Length: 107
Length: 115
Image (cartoon, rainbow over all chains, first blue to last red; front, side, top):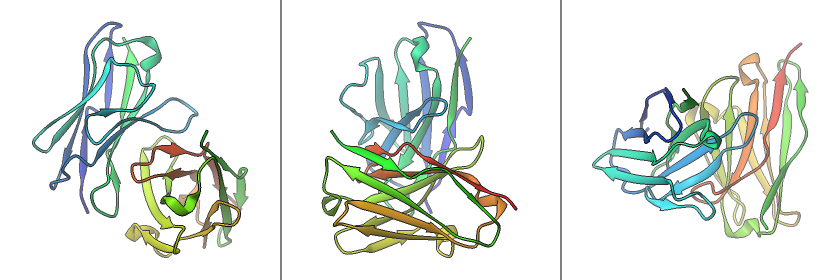
């Protein structure tokens, strides 16, 4: 199975900060990487697909990038509504596998 | 508008089975894959498996091969997951999701296993 190593597990940042969350794939997954946002008590919401493509309706402060086997989700200027858990998912090979998640809080 | 509506919360006794449903509106499930994902209390997301409703073909994560059975009824545009031989460790929220990259999600259903 492909392992997705997500870091950090938790992150506390100030409003307006630039925030980056990373997932490292144990094997080549091409651009089959999706980022989800999950607010407390809610279902996950797809934010980024294909590693870099912004889902319709997602604020432009969110972006996705890739460097080798490292995939990053960046929030350019943190807002209070961004407080959530974030998860990555690889979908190039079955079984699909998620990262362990990142809890983002406001400092 | 695409919507996935899951059935209500379940309370199951150890050793029994439960069957969860996920009714899709706004899209024909014949044209997509339906996935199931769980989330144990305070934990991350875990992919269980997926079904191709057009032909019933299923793929499961290894640890769920004896636990989950995925089916779909294209006439009612509904996907199902049966969980068998329930144990306390199966207590979790179970989500259905649609599309290759899980673009649409149900609201989730809490399954509690307790005697």
